[in-house]
Structures are given as C-alpha cells and as structure tokens.
Length: 157
Image (cartoon, rainbow, N blue to C red):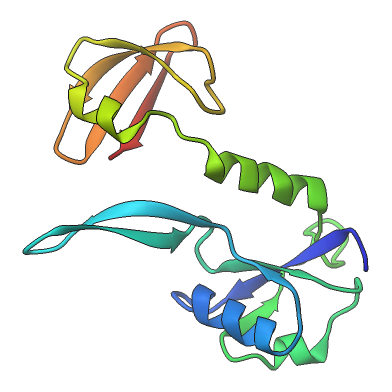
C-alpha cells in the first residue's frame, strides 16, 4: 500500500454517498467530517458535514483508477495545476486534518458561560495557548479577537 492519497472532485452534496460506494468497492476512502449545529424550525440538531465540500480522499496506486471514476457522484481526480499530474496528498497531511477535527476549542459548558468582554485562552490549533477577547455573542456563534495577531475568529456552538 502506498503512503500517498489522491483527492477526488465530486458532485455537490454526494460526499457521504461516494465514500460508502468506494468502501463497498474495496477502495479506501477518507471523508473528513465536522460536527455543526443546524437550526430547524422546531429544534437545534448536531449534524456531521464534510469539512471540504465536494472533495474526498482515496488511497490509490498513483494512477487513475477507472473503477473510482465509474463511481456515481465522482467527477474527476484533482490534478496539480502546474504539472497536470494527479495531486498527491501525504498521509501526514491527512493525519493533521484528523488531529484538527478531534481538537476541542472549548468544552460545551464553557461556551454557555461565555459573555461579551470575557478573555479566554484557546485550546486548539491554530491558536492554541493564545488569548482572545469576546467581541460578539450570538445564539450560535461567538467572535473572538486575538489582538496580538490582529485576527478575528468565529466559533460556532
């Protein structure tokens, strides 16, 4: 097995279906999912959405696999714009994505207690250990300003 992965470009909103179809064909696929809160008319629900819309990663031999391209929802392999060859993604890069998705910036109970003007220390990349001041609190979002970087960061609840 190779250590490199390829990216596939997909039809919109088919990421989970394509991952399932590829896995059924015996092709190893990685779809990074993140949890988001969705507001419905009668409730708020946590759902998993693709981190990268319309993209999925497959472990491949480095050549275009016709079986992958015949999978419903797959449009094409992602190519390197400079060389025109398949874009290769290293295992370490996908591990970084997995680590990022597993990090918690704040515990759920902390988010409920945050108020306008509070100063909080971030607990996740890319701002781990930096302090941010709360500049806006909304029902589903909190905005922090990290003054030393001059950066505003929005956190969804």
